Image (cartoon, rainbow, N blue to C red; front, side):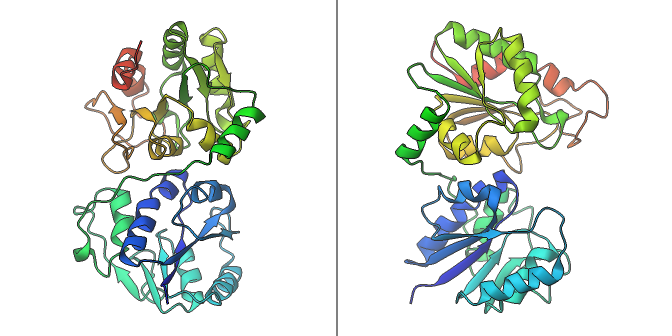
Length: 336
């Protein structure tokens, strides 16, 4: 009988993308394995584009919600599906509680919030040996970290041509001209967001060369995108808050090139194989870089960065304000 595995997914888009190499490795180690994912509803579009996944089961619990009794009951229901192993990717006690409630024989995960009694295949993370989040996930495919070669494949998402065509038609878009995509948001805070005026300058340059510019993000990013559009004399198409995540993924796959902050959309663009320039200010590419041979990171590497703060503690955000459009343009290496 093929092995049946349940993965309890992380919550952030970028982390969800980074589960794909784990799923691929599990399939290689266990041919014919059935791999299901327990994931938040909003993230399902990411897993729908991973061919290794058999079924996506909705995780109904929101960020920060305890609901310990309901979590236990949910775990009991999951346990009736006959899994041989559950792999817990979040480091929280809450996620481990669901795993324990399943009664699944092998419950795999890293040491976290008092999880010793809940997981029975528990690993102590060697952060120095595995600095990248994607490798930390993939290592859990093996019986022990020593069996992992320390190198994951890059995440790869598969796009359905019909879904892409529907997304284009639904938003009145086409690819008659090459598409430059901007992802100007970053959920963590303003110290990770490249200034609107720099995005606008790039938009003007490539519009003059015959490119169209699409702006991606959530409703929270709409005003920033509108500022970019205003500063670029209305040359952009603002899709922020107007697409579902599924549509955003399919439309991003149409882009010839993408400029992103360090964000979930950056990881999506990388997994779609888009030519990508990822801008880093307060954060670092050492832990969660864009995982693609077609991606470049851009940073000034100032003495005060990375500080990992939401807002610049020095009040100037020089790491982004002084990062000129020329540097990003050079990283993209777009044909004129």
